[in-house]
Amino acid sequence: MSDCYISENNQFRVEVKTTFDFDQSNPLNFQYLFRYTILITNQGEISAQLLSRKWNIKDAKGDVKLVEGAGVIGQQPFFEVGQSFEYSSYCPLPTLTGEMWGHFNMINKYGQSFKIDTPLFKFSVPSEFIDNY
Image 1 (cartoon, rainbow, N blue to C red):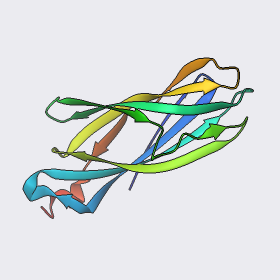
Image 2 (image 1 turned 30 degrees about the horizontal axis):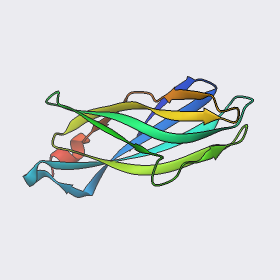
Image 3 (image 1 turned 90 degrees about the vertical axis):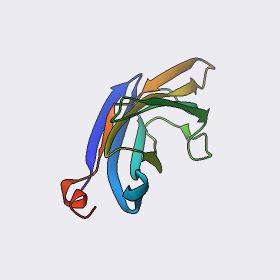
Image 4 (image 1 turned 90 degrees about the horizontal axis):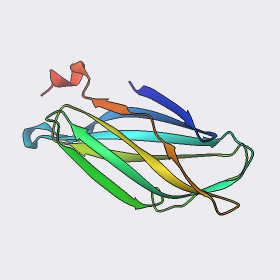
């Protein structure tokens, strides 16, 4: 089961799907691994490149971790008009639930910088897995 979250801003659409990875989690050590897949689509009329990202990751205790870095999964994709880029990554949490939000830093073909905000997306261990722990 996966949940889907969507945001649209600065002529880009960001769709995020999240799932829980039971096989890679270790509840005895309070390690829960969640997978997220992001689809970014240029809905505007100007091409642009993704340069970096900034994530806020909040666990169920309220602790927030900030993660910043160049590109996504080692890439800095370039978006022509109408083009999309999809990638998957993981988020480890010490709690059964959490949430993540952030933005992508972009530059258009004219050298103007802007950012694309992501939706806030949530992670949750499904109840059927909690019974297995």
